[in-house]
Image (cartoon, rainbow, N blue to C red; front, side, top):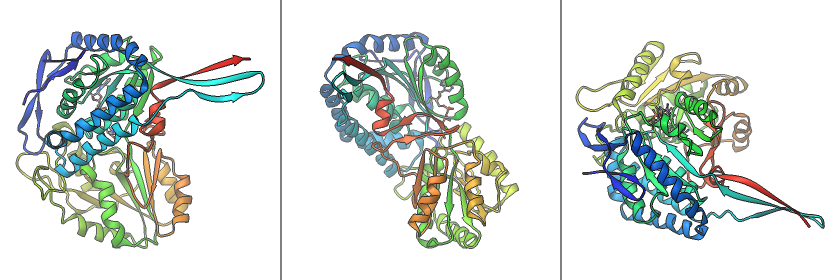
Length: 466
Ligand code: NAD
């Protein structure tokens, strides 16, 4: 398989290459082209040249390009899903799900419009709100859901009349480069560019004077660096950062019924998702029962290469993350009681069996920090007021959930949790049409939904005296 960068409507080799490793068996999936500073400059220059004409192109035509991109992804769904599984490690059906979310995102944004809005009119004045593009967008991406996180930046950005440069993570660039092949048959040269790196060009993209906005998904640590650098030129940013989602389980739940949903909500993509359950707070009256039920369910899990149809859980995506999660696992073993998993199988691949750890509490690193891997701490609570306080005590504020048979009670608690999204009796239910906001150290701004589109515009007021 051969992959190329996309710069100014041309698919070009990189200045260098890096191998992309299949985390299930440590084989090389393919070599990824990586750009140098000159190619980065060419990509930004191409995006800057293309943007004014693209912004003048009627929005219906821009939307039609997005719709065609969604159709092209649908036509190539099998190839794209296979690539996602090979580079991310996820079971193939979940990679199809990601490819389908990409189509949904294209569809959703192709239906949005940015008409002039009349916000006030009387005998004396007429006030209109206009939405203008920002210019050149740099989208910097992580490795856990490469295409979904790319399209939720690309689609609203180009619909609003911006041009964009995508920079995928070095360990998962291939599905994005495949998307580039489809893009190149649909969009004018320079409107969408894709450059890859070896974890060394993100800073240069952020600092480039012709980039107007940084749309970033990744760790809070990198987000802080980006915000600091962007401040030098007062660039706009959207930051979708780390999370440590709490789920609060009330004593009235049907334990057997919610257990599989909690497992899904905590271990989707082997827990390498920003908004999965990372702290499970369970009332003391059902603590033992829920721990046992979860352990019984999760111990049946089939882990392995995501191309195998029986596999439900894949590996950790890359070697560095594997080492990080193993360190959390060792610490969890010493602070709590492992009731399921806890193994690092011998042999090739970055595998850790899905792990449940009980008898841990706030203050333990496995509870307070985000391992971004398949270890779920289960924490006992006795008082609802106290558990709300503990859930909110985190510096993160991405997602949270409340689980109860009493919808009203659950919604009251949901209203008091500090998070961008609070789910009731579910967790990690995402959709490109639903805004995905952030709070606290989990980021700034909103991705997805109508609000996600507005993040790629400048609001301009035209105030007319009659
Ligand atoms: P990371 O921050 O290490 O890297 C993300 C991207 O930033 C990569 O493309 C990397 O090359 C680039 N980068 C690295 N240093 C940079 C710099 N100084 N300037 C600009 N760019 C730079 O994150 P990761 O390990 O790839 O991803 C995992 C993290 O992402 C987790 O913390 C997870 O919670 C978070 N995440 C958040 C969301 C969300 O929507 N909030 C979604 C997915 C993942």
